[in-house]
Image (cartoon, rainbow, N blue to C red; front, side, top):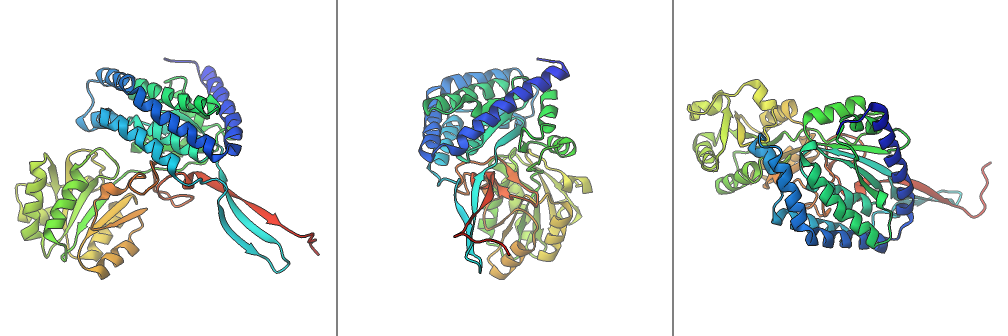
Length: 421
């Protein structure tokens, strides 16, 4: 559907003003009411699972030329719909993020000052192919007392609409306004631009998708942005790694789901163990369908590996491809990550605690793992129920963004009649 620019702006203005009114209601809605909406939405996702899957099948059929990794991100299965419903329930079970006293202190004059968590207001969520993002974002925003306008990718329009219907059913069951969760009323790309210019109507924009989307949002936005950059994640296997553990963790970190942002894209392996361990790692991954791009040190051990260019080490593959480099110790690994990483998630595999702590203390990334798969970088795995994205910027929030990270704060000052001299 194509609409004129002024009509697109009008549609956004209408949606955002309705969202702002809904946000006022949500900000004072008690936790039981918001949680009831989430539980009803989860029940609707289960009850309407066949409809959601049918809509998703239509989306997949309408886009036959997608890469296997993209199709995996877009595709829903009964298990994935159930996982969406379970995530919404998990969000409902979390403590209320609104009204938390974040800090409290008393001044010498007797004034008591409190920093108290409060909702952000209206959030604009711009995402690409993964339909479950809509359910996760809606649940988290509702839990955090904010309204949300969802703009998914054109490939997932039918899936997004079906999931949105379930979320609205939950809102109605709890007596909350439908406009608390909205989907873009048009697939026109101009709607994204209108969202980015909606200062005063939208309080925060969250992009979740590829580099092109995030770059556009950061360049054009007149609204604050909580950025989700590339997931160029590294796994470094140190000389003191347990070989069996290294093989198991790397296989999961790369191949569990290659199209997610927490998938390891580069293997760094210590030169001291590379001659014996690297052939085993490559054989494990090759058996799972992985291909490789290897620098000279790795190809000296396995000459049949395709050579890597420098650009390969800056590529988020989102596919069954792994860049491989042999490094001479932890400092070389840290240098490589600092040069090529996107500050998302890095992992070290080692039995040497001192080296592990040095690695974790010296990476700049939002998340560091020790003896664990990078694919654990996920809001659900962190206990947030779900996530609205992985924030890789330096302000407001970092790592998986859950209900607490979707709050801002205000100050309350309690006196006993004090006046300022």
